[in-house]
Image (cartoon, rainbow, N blue to C red):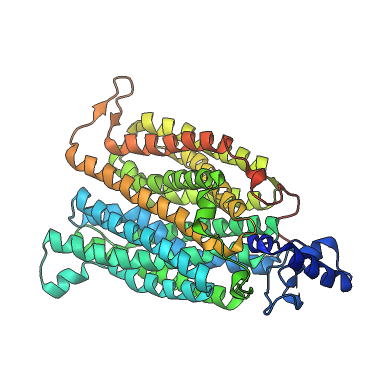
Length: 507
């Protein structure tokens, strides 16, 4: 049996603790079981043995390794979000500019969505911390995503209702549906991520859940680019109407596929229960300030933010780089990102089978960051007549993405540890930071793109150092370098979790 110690348990008086341990000894429990007894429950798989040291009892997460079926059902629960997110960051800016919006207006639409996403993330995190109901938030958010996503990529609905083609009305209309989409997306993401520490108390299984989720993120992205490749190949996009038709079909197919996986997730995953729901009044919930006093909170937050900037900024600018800077065919908008996600998927599968320690988490994040710094330098100097090298570089980028994201998200889980009564706040606050930051960074880049009409040519290779090329090379590369510096300052062994995770990730 494992430990299910919670911060609230330490707030009990010495008398109550001794009494609870005596009650456990009467049942011939082991030392680790006795520690669980101070919460009034011992978890054993799906069931719990209950004791009367509190008025109500709690079903805590089991410390046994999860089976593959449980990990699989959890991993696919984010597929709808991942499909729509892949389309959002890869094609939104290009779609909006191709149908007539200025780069600044297109960035405004994305920023409105990111702000709505960030604000909703915090509120949803707080509500989940108070009331639980992870699956309800997940299902409700998925409904909003499905309804609004087709409106974002289906043309300006507000313009049709008002009978106008004004750019101002178009920008407002797209911004409204972008905000609704991101509200639903945030509710689904926070509830799904926060479930990890409430599903299992086994540290290795938590990493397995994270890695499996990341692996299916790669599957979702690969599926999205397969859909996009087919649409771009068979549906003409020579005018504004054709472009809207292309992306409308991409949205519809993505929603249908993602919704099927959401249903499987809701049916296959048991609703976790938060411990503080059933604890007696002598127990207190962890305050927000508990996390604000921890140095590790700020370190993990910064690393997670930088990891998201690496993946999201590169994903948003890659299509522009392929078409405008390398002058590749339109199909490259789907092929090159697909290669990146195939490599990320393969790397994620390998990561699932490794034995993890806190040292290895830091080492693998550093490896991914180094790969991105190398990739950024090549992207900056690669001339258009050597465009074929982008395929090799896609492999490097894919592996780097998997390394930084799996380790960064796993660091979040280590930060939370067994403090389950505030896990949603941690995930919500960190997501707030990264989403707001991504929106602001992309807006600044596109705002400069509006004012910058020329680019500097390198005398040696004749490379036009456009704003897109410079941003794609320097922003992810700089974030990777800063992430390595922050990672080396972390003390993950001080996070109240087991420092070694010497068990298979999947059983």
